[in-house]
Length: 222
Image (cartoon, rainbow, N blue to C red; front, side, top):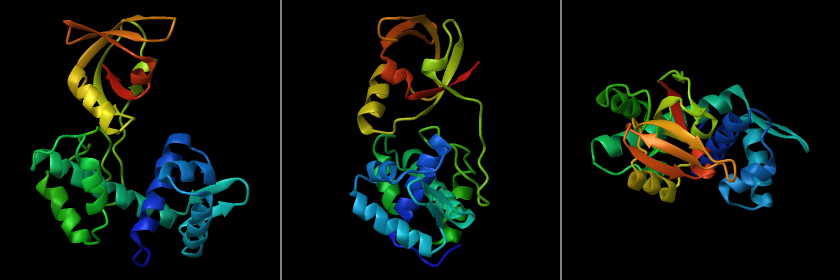
């Protein structure tokens, strides 16, 4: 692991890791600026700092990618964040829409021993309260077969296993509609006009959801 990093440096590494996982390509300065909600000049400055610490490779006018050391550092940050979210929900009874900001603060704690004991205390969870995989101590991630709800064919049954959008409004919407992790559903109809979906939830309730919801909810086919 690198010498101790600032919280800002850690946040940038985590942002680059998140974007690269979603896109699978080099990460542009602009996408980092959007993710971090900061100026292009600030991104350029941080890229230089992370490059000097050999945590990223930068290709001019193309973008950046994490080095092996940078990726390992980012994965351990993700591990801490998701373990803290799990602890806050399971042990302190926070709701899943309350824990992100708290975990953002707690993830910067440096003690590896504390995090390993936290993992053991929680009985080595594989997924956090939002359905995101939790890397183990060695950085390994348990992947699963999942698709976005919008990709599910009509008539196919599935279980909600995760969310793409972690925003508070979206999580609160899911709470109100009952589309929580573990909810069983089937697409009864897809409307061509706006790609909205009529869902049959738990074989009883019928629920109309927008295309946006379908593009931000992960399900696993049954």
